[in-house]
Length: 107
Ligand code: SF4
Ligand code: SF4
Image: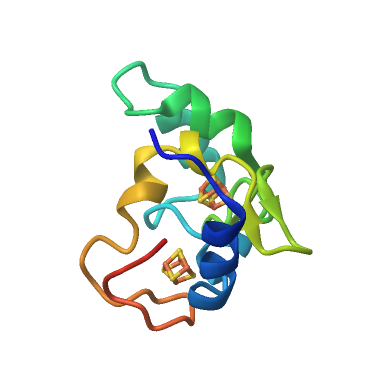
């Protein structure tokens, strides 16, 4: 496990606008469906993700979530070292579709 140094935070702020943490979608399901799916014991990091999600959409609408660990002032993750796999893997080898345009080299 790495240590989050001041230098690292500075580098992250320059490289990453944090767009994909501010408000994001998980699959194409409704918010209620996502929450139900995450409650399944088969889901990787399910309990961790459930406690961090902040629903920004109605339960029966296509999901949009915020995150309890997201700091809108610093635009940094407050759980960087223990963030779930879905956050570590994003944008899954594709170009991020939340606005930053990064394909590889996410912090
Ligand atoms: S895709 Fe990567 S670089 Fe872009 S906002 Fe998300 S974490 Fe930052
Ligand atoms: S845990 Fe961190 S990386 Fe994942 S959505 Fe929340 S703020 Fe972003």
